[in-house]
Length: 380
Image 1 (tube, rainbow, N blue to C red):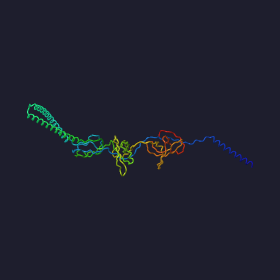
Image 2: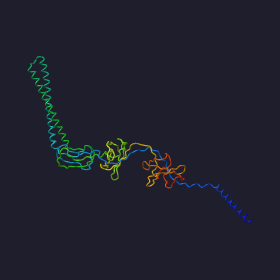
Image 3: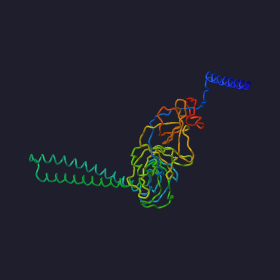
Image 4: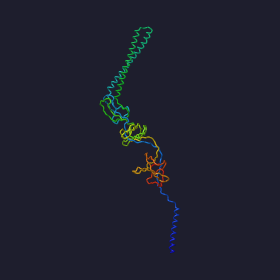
């Protein structure tokens, strides 16, 4: 019995010694460091970004006219065809000018003849005036009689009448010459502005009347773009606002322009207003009728920017969030993306400027995990 008690006592004492030894060892050994996840971080940036509204519509001709004949005459030549690019004042077509030119030449000869007659009448009037002055002086000195005075006065009045008649005839002749010159000029049909020939209606040999359309001339530089915008957004758009316009044609053409006018009438069915943009189109690649998408700048506003790769999106939920690093710990922050700006996005949420956000390695993170942040200035 005594041996059993002694053995049990020895076992208890040994257990106590082992526990004490382990306790001391645990106090002396340093605690193991927690595992840290390596991530790359960039600071959120405060910025001033554009505010713009989007709208869609169509490109239309800035100007478009039917080039018509102004006189009745035979069409002799059409010097352009569909697709021809023309400059202002360029000759587009020619009418038969022979009859009008012959009449103009005759009128010019008449003007020359009447000018000569007017010169002779003027010289005669000058002599008659001088003679009358001398006769009047002699009459006052009683050197000549009343009959000679009356004859000189009559000759002067006749010379005045002839000169007046010659001047009137000259005015008529010149008016006729100008009229025929206009007719001759109208036989040559020119472009009223620079543009492109959209349609050709007649061929040489046709007899045209005044107002007969020959061609359709369309101005494509600048190009007009008309977009439709909800009436609530249109109130922020003013004439002169800058705009970027993507005109779709195969690879798409990017144009810059300004708001020309905002139409005052609201469409009753769709509650939209028409906004017209004026866009330089030097290359001519954008054409009337093409679909256009416009971004109209209405001002600027402060925003917080983070790299787009920092934002994580939960499929099907519409929820977006990112991870920040706060004293070595990953913290999830829900944000709302308000604008995409290339490799960055503007976000709204509880995120101060300068806060480090994780741009690489965030897929492995959960809130509360220890991280080892590596600052980078380059997007992954």
